[in-house]
Length: 218
Picture 1 (cartoon, rainbow, N blue to C red):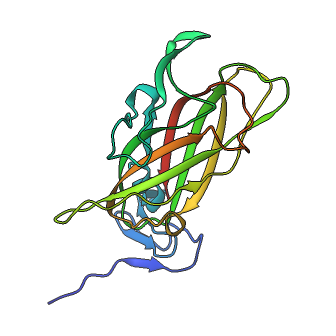
Picture 2 (spheres, rainbow, N blue to C red; picture 1 turned 135 degrees about the vertical axis):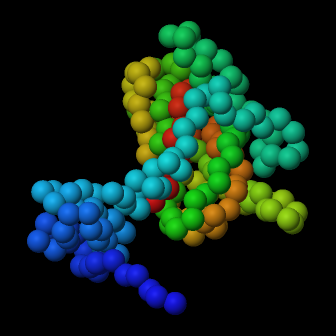
């Protein structure tokens, strides 16, 4: 059997030149996981790992999140699905300040990734007089193929969300390794995101409003 090999480099950041690739020729950087094509006059990037993974980004508006409401959830109390009182065109999930309430979502974690990044768009229902803290937790459950569904993990406590002294929307972002969350690439998982309103370190009085949730993998 004949083997065809294209021109390649393992040097990080190295891009081929038109002297190295003639018109119509393809090359790749195996370290950067990028592929290039020569038009003769220019070198064009055809594909890269990050762009391929980009299609596995997940975004959920408040009304698209699942509603934990029975014993199949780690925390079976859901954050209410309401309209933002300050702008009723926007649906939000309202998390109470005395209970642990949650929302859910389902994701097929792509292959060849190692990090989980979550970005939340949020606000306080009522502006606090001074900056306050909100405590969020994340639970996961493997949806196995050909075998029983897994059990819920213990909670991963996210970094503290700082609430400003206004009712404007703000963004929170945190990156966590799959290993820290106990996740395996190329596996379906159910997630539950909760506010631990009864936690003494959760100092925001009143509801915490969640507008949008984005999860990205890298």
